[in-house]
Image 1 (spheres, rainbow, N blue to C red):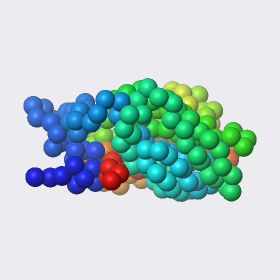
Image 2 (cartoon, rainbow, N blue to C red; image 1 turned 180 degrees about the vertical axis):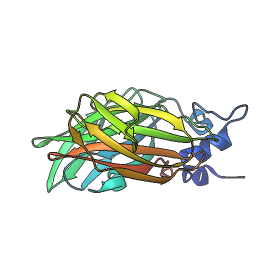
Image 3 (cartoon, rainbow, N blue to C red; image 1 turned 90 degrees about the horizontal axis):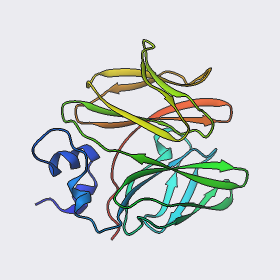
Length: 229
């Protein structure tokens, strides 16, 4: 028998595959269905200028880096956080600020941290984790505050996602092939991003952020953190 702790270390795709029967595509994880009322899956994403440390009640101290996938945390199980206002202490560049968000019960969310002067804001992006064991799942986040028409295109220029407002997400299932994509905001473009060889059943997220005047993008794998003991 596989314990919940072992399950939590697996990618979301593996959890979905093990938790469902009667179809390859899964909408909700069985693991989530067993959790108490009010539970939320929370992932943190830093669009801050430098590395940050976030003190939370649901995950303790979470360190978010300043480069690429290190900016993105795994999903944490936030018990009883649904329907409540959640506060976090965010320390970045020697300064600490309080950021708050109010998640809905029973949801997967990504909380994107932005800097506004000396304050840190927390934008909620509602995720819809889906799974197809025959294809790769590609999710694109416009994790900027000011890009009103974010887009992601294939290397050939063919659009994958388009006209995305700030702090929003779109996703689709794609064939598991090697791919290169380019994120753009208006006339600004990030450097082409190689996704490497995508795996069938893999869950991948591409993030577009603005660092100063530069548009940048990177890829991360979606995972769930072990539950706190």
